[in-house]
Image (cartoon, rainbow, N blue to C red; front, side, top):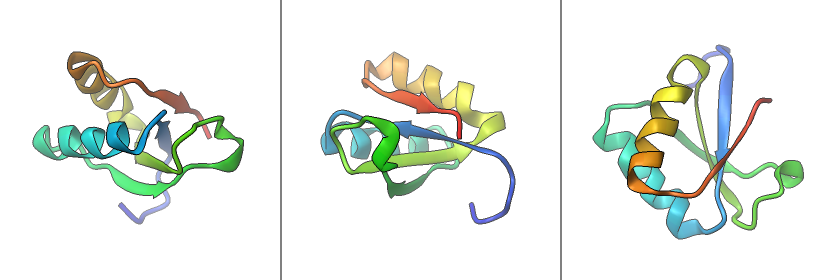
Length: 75
């Protein structure tokens, strides 16, 4: 996922949740890249996931089903 298409960044409260979310994305074949959490994102965890904007709702639904806590940043 290195092109210039729009993305959404998912931030998490713990590294455990971030890594679990990465596993969920992989299991669901949703492209997601582990990136540093933006400092202004308000997350307690330093790791975030970035996914293409057109797959963000799908990732959010998968994380909700697993009850993984997250917030989505629009930029």
